[in-house]
Image (cartoon, rainbow, N blue to C red):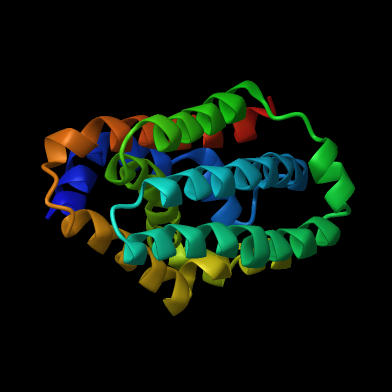
Length: 212
């Protein structure tokens, strides 16, 4: 299975993601709220461009079913995920206008540019390998730190994380993994995109923790 092999190869980077202080402190409830506020502003901007990348991928889809998958993901990002972020922003004293006005940091800009360029210039499955890392790593983070979340005293952190522990979110990740597993593509072909996106995920957490 292509997805399982990609995850195995990325074990070192993903281990660092799972153990990152931003993640550990967020799930445990000790993360300073200001760091979370900064993360939300950055991630909102990321999601806007993530949806654009998925829309580009839809145009590259080899059949209607896969085009539908990419478009559904893009639509879900700009409706469900962004609506959830609007609620989260309000909970921490921010507005949608604040998010739209926030300047993406260096890592955010580079990551967004990378995803859009892959989805515009490479084939559909290369794009899916790149975007899968975001969806899948958030699921693994949530599962790895589930026990910490149960005792988390910060309500907004619990609500943020609960999305990634839902059956619906797990089903979404499994659907994307299946796309790669049925692609007929060798892991060697997909690995460069999965690896690069994994490194960007790690850097995104670090930038959020440092606040720049």
